[in-house]
Length: 269
Picture 1: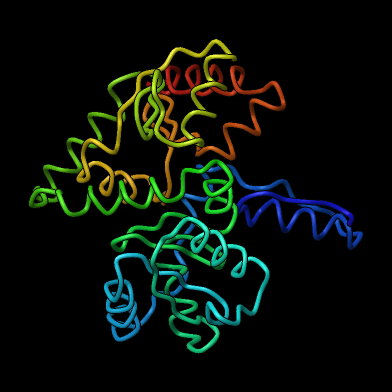
Picture 2: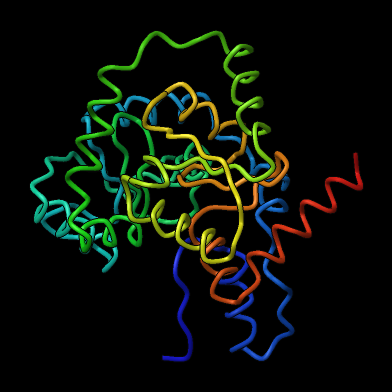
């Protein structure tokens, strides 16, 4: 083993590959750069319609390599085993059987790797997220919460009203964390990790429980072009999710990064 990488970070993966191949490795892009990058070529309307139909086939839907009885990659096998161990019933689709769906779903989900697990059409995550939830004993509870939230969701607000509300929430504090649960009682391990990192770094922050409002939960994904939670914002700009925040904290750079963003935004205004 030469190196390891946790999470879906295409820039870091490229840098590591080039490093071990002897090429000059460019620095991995920031979350803001990833969000601002131009989108890949759009999938055809027929492919998007097919993906929409597949997402609606089962309340819990796994897009994997192979089938549950015969996974064709180790990551898919690990997710299947985690779901079965947690007692989660799920449908599946072999992305190796349809290249259009394989490429189009990456665009729809804004997630570059497989497997991908969806609950009521919402991306829960890939292998790292699912297996970490399973290890913490949170997988079944998280799926059940998402199913219940989707069933209880009110009629969606008009898009313009929802985006205005999301924008107001993002700017409601200089540092704003959108998480599952409250800082005193996080409802997922990733949210708890980010809360702990912010407190350890001495960063004051506001928060919003995305489990309390499915409209905000879905609208913020579109607003930020970021598919998972928690999400941390500084002066309305996305800093990143759990992986990015924890990496900055591990490097002793979280407080510095937040302060630099605050100063930059202040100067820009």
